[in-house]
Length: 162
Image (cartoon, rainbow, N blue to C red; front, top):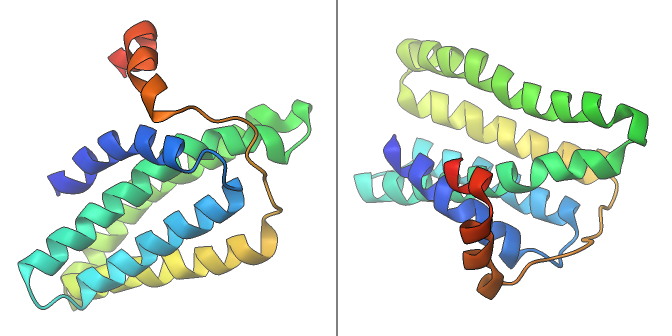
C-alpha cells in the first residue's frame, strides 16, 4: 500500500521532466495504459514480487498523472472555463478516491482482491481508449531540465511544503 504513494511522490517531478518535450496526450495515454496494465498484472500475479513491481509502476503512473493533469486543463478549454475544467479533473480524482476505494473493497470482499485489481485495470484500459479517441493533441510547450530540479526545490517554498 505504501509503495505506490512513495513512488508517486518521487516520480511526479521526474516524469514531468523526462516527458517535457512529448505531446501531453501521448504522456497521459502511456501513464493510463501503464496503470491499467499494472493493475491487471496485480490481478494475475503469481508472486508477491510481481505485485510489488506492479504497485511500483502504478506509483509512477499516478505521480506522472498528478504532475501534468492540472496543466493540461489550461490548454484544453477557453480561458473562461479553466477553473471548471481544473475542478472536473481534480474532482474526478477525488470522486474516484471517495467512491472507488470503497467500491474496490466491496468488489474484493465479494469476489476477491484479484477481481478488484482486474476491474481497475480494465477501467484504466477503457480510459486509455477514450483518451486516444476523444482527447486532442496537446503539444508540449516548455520543459525543465533534470539539472534545474534542485533549484526549483530550493527556491519554491510551497513546493517544498507540499
